[in-house]
Length: 237
Image 1 (spheres, rainbow, N blue to C red):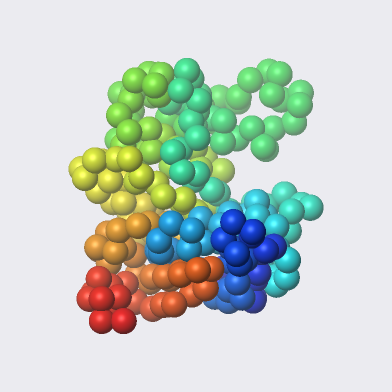
Image 2: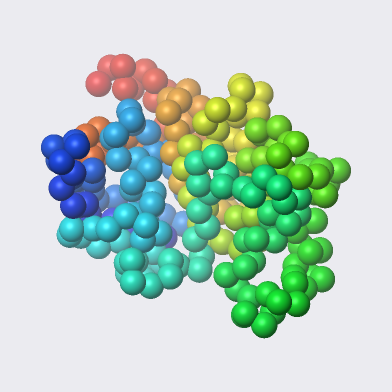
């Protein structure tokens, strides 16, 4: 088991007139590629953030590799989160942004001396693997949207996670850049057996890249199954 949600419910939202998440139960196994889908306000991003303890629960339990997650402790070391928009520091170079993914593992003294050589080597290897070797020392402000997202993926990968959570990683990207980002995630899944959970809006992309789809509506799961032919399945439903 990788991720298990047991009847999780968030506090009541006056804006929505309901909890954002309401009695959500699902299990995501090691090595799965899962797409979370739904309209705005359905709860998909909230579910992703709840897994790393960023959204409080009124009731229910989330377990990652059998370890209970909550807001009082640091999220599971096997989990890396790719936030919407990438969350990069635009004035830093690509390699410096990737190295920021190691900050949580450095002591205060180590951070004063800078990043070790082996971390810099690893950051360069990750950028090279993602097709960004030539952009390693460019400020991310000058990179395209698709390149920035791949830098953000490299920053997550330097943490050596077994689980990658991606919150709308293709928002604002053109068709080609979106395809490159999704192919990068698919390659990580295929070659490394990484568990990937990605929030998407596009049913066709989910059908093309994910093995499984979980569709939310008004804070509840309305579909959990294979993503093949998903547009037709949802239309029939």
